[in-house]
Length: 204
Image 1: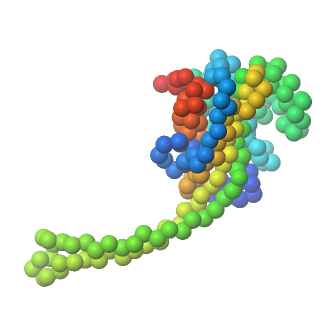
Image 2 (image 1 turned 60 degrees about the vertical axis):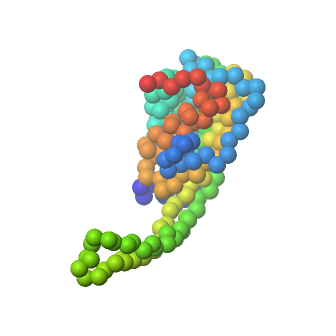
Image 3 (image 1 turned 45 degrees about the horizontal axis):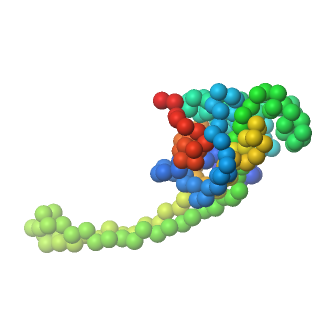
C-alpha cells in the first residue's frame, strides 16, 4: 500500500478498474464511431507512463497477464522499446509496427484527492432487547470516513488503424496494490470495450 500511494503521489502510473461496481468507476468514456473491433490474434502492447522503470515494468507485466487472461496476446512495452524509445514517436511507431501489434493500451494518472464523508447516526428502536429496563431506544452516533480517490485516464490506440479508439477517465477509491489495480483494469476495460463493440468475447 505504501509503495503504491508513494508512486501515485509522485505522478507515476496507476491503473483503472471496473465499469459496473467495485472500487473504480468510469466517469466518462469516448469511442471512435467508425472503430473496428480489435484483432485479438495480434499483440496488444501495454504501456505504463511513469518515470520509475521498476514500477513501469511490474505494471506492464501485470497488464499483459490480464490481456492474456481475456484471450489476447500482450506485450509489455519495455520488452521491445529500448531506453528512450518510448519518447521517440517515429521509433516507437516503427518498433510496434514491426512487432505486429494491433493496439496499444496506455494509462496515466490525472489526479489524486482525499474525500471526507459523514454518515449521520440513526436511532435504533428495540422491541425485545432490554424491555425489562425500559431501554426502548438506543442511538447509533454518526461517523466520518476518509477515502483516497485516484483519477486515471485510459487510452486505447489502434496501431493498424492509426487512431484513437477509446478514451476513458475513471476514479479509483482506496487503491490497495498494483496487482489488484491491474486486475480491476482488466475487468473495467474488458467491460467497456465489449460495451463499445471493440472486442467481442472474453475468454473464460
